[in-house]
Length: 425
Image (cartoon, rainbow, N blue to C red; front, side, top):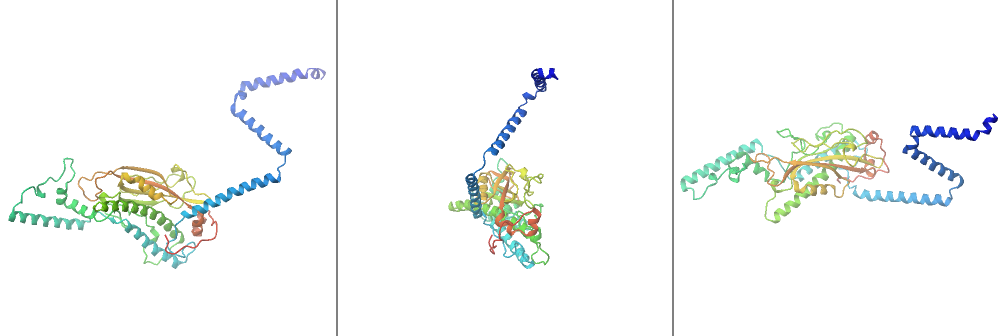
């Protein structure tokens, strides 16, 4: 023991040296993560130690409390300002959040009428039917007979008659003369000049199995039938109507502005000269966007199949999902249109709303050299899919939600239910 006491200093130094050598061999002293951790630990210890020696004064507490209250007030003011953009109103009075069976039946009828009004606002046209093609065949036959009779009686009158002009350009495109003699092309031109864009009405599927342009809620069909209509179906239909109306209003605005310019120049607006030439589909996602999940669908600009929204927050660059403050939805729009108007239309859809364009893709539409069925005109026509997301603030929309919908997503009404003005959209 005396030896140890006399040589304690040398023994301790030797042990420390051995430990240092071991740490050096293991590389621990050279590990940045360890050093950073030690620094963080020291900082935390110093902060805690300072709290023991320095008390927090009441004045400091009041200052921090005032700063927090200022932030809360700014947040409340921001949400009050945001409510100015919440312009949606239910289609029917007394249906949300707990309407009676009669109120739900009234909503079903009003919803059907409103969807038809949306469709009519497009000034839609359709390709010629078989009956219309047969009628045009008779018209062309009568014209040929009359022309033949005139030539026999009076001669050709000099110059080339329409009959003698080429039917196609060197590129194989049908000429006006060729179109006048082609039954299908003539019928297609006749229909295209009668409206502003192609669209398939709700509840109808055409002969090529293309789906209706608008998304009509399946539980709202059959207004004359008496059966149970659930409040959650009414709510889904209402939200879908709000989003589709924003899109249709934007399409109508863009086409009407172009139509006004054409009329001012003594022209005639029709599908072939207007920006949006066909509404292939407008579709919304089921329910609300929650955090996580896998991509459910994707928009393909080709073909006539409806484009569906991806349906997850991870599928878009914004990563927006529903929170305790608002609910998130996605919707996709598939159109045939003049490529030069894509940005104008997107801006029109997003203006004054909480909608955001999260993805756009397009490809050139096929050239219709024969001018059969749908005629889009001579501009740079593309098939485009635009994906949007939108948010719906908890107030007022969660207070209008039926209880079953709130329970499904674990939501609560943030305040008293605000009155729903009848007939407002």
